[in-house]
Amino acid sequence: MSQAQPASVGRKDAMTIGAASVGTVFEWYDFYLYGSLATYITHHFFSGVNETTGYIFALLAFAAGFAVRPARIPSWSPCS
Image (cartoon, rainbow, N blue to C red; front, side):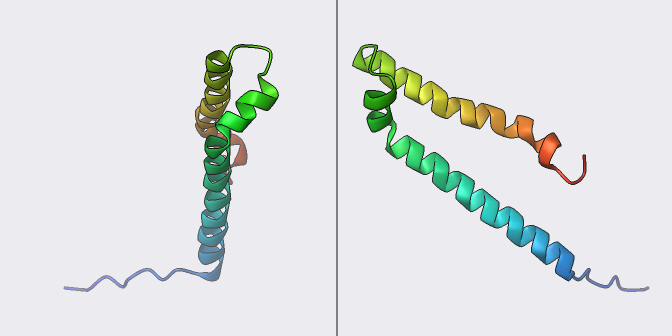
């Protein structure tokens, strides 16, 4: 019976994992900032409507970022 050798992670794989991790951290930080500042964004960008509607618009813009995120994968993926 032969034993399988564990696969080693090469330099290119490590660079890919590192770059993907850094990109994910920046993206989630961006979502965190937008969510934290949603009230401020409501008053400055959606001031033409009442406060509740403006807050809903700010949260819808926030949700659009999550909705578009999976759609971007084929265009940025090196496998496409």
